[in-house]
Image (cartoon, rainbow, N blue to C red; front, side, top):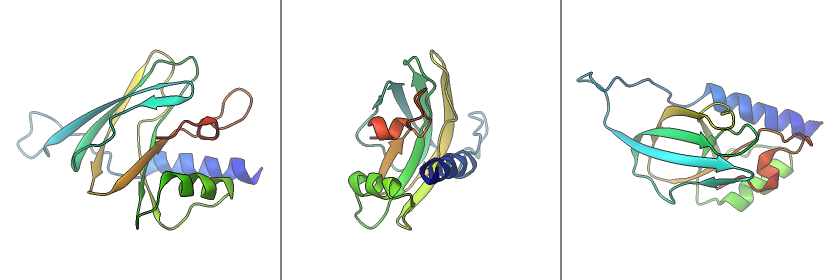
Length: 144
């Protein structure tokens, strides 16, 4: 039960945090944008290994049969994804993880997108939506 509460909190924080400003490409004040297309399916992401810093429009395409979403987290102070997964298993979000948000749940065959500002550093993406068996996708390896 505590794990479900933690993962739900992660999902809610991810959906409500980060820079998700809509940028009008016709506006003279719109920030320059990078693009990242990430494809999701059971239980993997096909994503670029690196992205340039700056405003990045993240497109999530769901090629799976289950809904998926994408939570972008910044890993500060030289920490790595394995440590993040251990922390989530221990039902805590460490203070060296910054939740940036990401595209909301994407139904099979659909695409969602958001705009996130990335600063230089190390990041991870994960899906915390539960499967029909109740296991969060991240626990099935849906992290990159």
